[in-house]
Image (cartoon, rainbow, N blue to C red; front, side, top):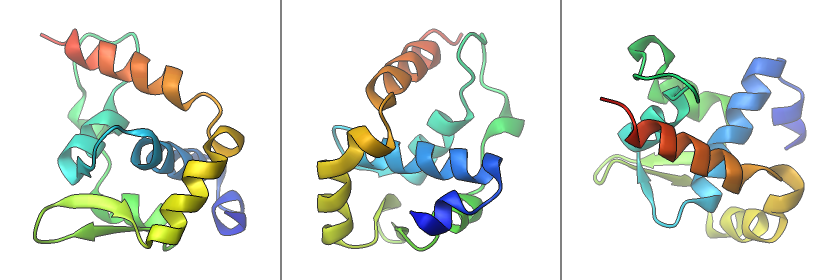
Length: 112
C-alpha cells in the first residue's frame, strides 16, 4: 500500500477503487465488469467509453496486488493472504466502498 500511496494522486485513487471493488464485491468480477464499474460517473446518463480503463492500466496501478486469470477473465488479488488482509482492513483503506459501489451500481442500472 505504500507503493500505491506513493503514486500520482489519480493513480492512487484508481488503485484504491480497484482494490475496493475486488475486496468488497459479493462475487469475483470479470475484467470487463470491473472496467465498466470504474468507468461509471455517478450522475451521468450513459457510460462514456473514454472513461473505461485498460486492463493493463488496472493491473499496473495496483503495484503487483492484482492479477487476471486469463482462462476465466476474472480479476482478483494476487494471493489469498492479500485477500485476507483487505477483508480485515477494508474499512481503513476504503471507508466509503459500500456507498460508492451502491451509487455506481444504481447509476449503471439507470443507463439507457
